[in-house]
Amino acid sequence: MHPKETSICVFTNHATIGFRSVMKGIAYAARERGWAVRTIELDHTAASIHELLSEWHPAGFLSYYLPPDLFPKRSVCVHISPQNAVGEVWTVRHDSEATGKMAAHELLKLAGRFYAFVGDPTYAPWSRIRGEHFMKIVSRFGFKCSVCDVMRPADNPIVEQMNLMRWIKGLDLPCAIFAANDKTAESVLAAALAAGLQVPDDIAILGVDNDEDSCENAPVTLSSIIPDFFHGGMLGCALLEKRINNPKSARRSTAYYGDLGVAERSSTRLQLKPNALVTQMREFIRIRAVSGISAVDVIHVTGRQRRGVELAFKAATGKTIGEELQDVRIELAQRALADESIQICEIPSLVGYVSQNQLERLFKRTCGMTMRAYRQSQALSRRT
Image (cartoon, rainbow, N blue to C red; front, side, top):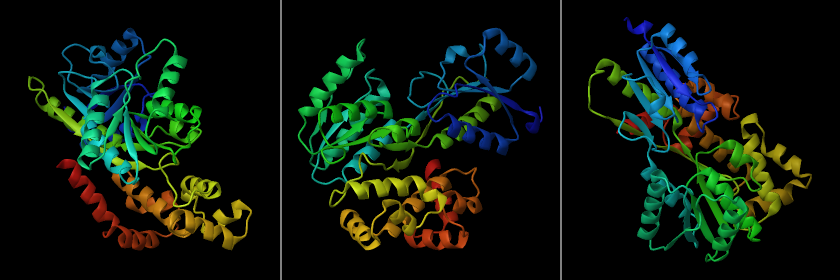
């Protein structure tokens, strides 16, 4: 079959974490190969799936977050499994070791803290790996790390939450907690607040997955490590291409995708001088920076005198409101550059700038390289 006529079938569940980014990565890589992408949702019946496949005749299959036994027998398939749940098959996995290390380096920035790890209640391998490498880095810097041993699947979630609250009350403070994923981070936050502790002053919390529904709607917005789901989708296509070209190969292959960085929110954002108004301003900047707001707009929403607000912000953060806006937008630009489906000329409008030249100058001054060079360096690091 001519490459441009090749079609692949993607089995997926749109409710899973990272679904949109993974699909963007698959679509981008498939387009480069001239493949047509067909998708089948998990809620299809076996009969309807068989009917669709007999009509499409896909050259291969990709799955995201689905078990291997759902696939047609003897099919050419690759599984994208963010939480390393798949065994001896062709698989793309999230690099849990690298995630644990990133969490440690991020939380070690919060000087003068004790440290702790809270794993997923299921004691899954990916959770254990994240915890082990988090603790290894923390101990390398001379710090002890407490490990939560009360999180386990429970018939009564109230009992689970009470156990977690008692454990948190027993920690040395202030403490920085790495939670194995955002769902666990939500539980840690609820327990900390129920214990009467302040977040992030007493307890700082960092999760994984950057599930925006969870992180943005929490009582204290949650910081989270951002998996590079887009690259995971691209790697899935790369492995599938190998399988299509050599379908009879018995050799298994696994590829790993990493993380884009940390989406910093209130749960880890400490201030030199705690100030509730400044906390609200920083949240406003983080959420609204993409809309092109200025420092004047930020001051205006406080309803207070400009000079007093500027002085309070500088005292609490060590930088001006304008510098905070700039930092947030540069971070957003870096994330956008990691998504190769976004053209560089589109990025300024996505992060709150009207002029591409303005962003280019600011980016080079801040990052020491052009936006194009940064994208190329990120692509190179993914391949090594």
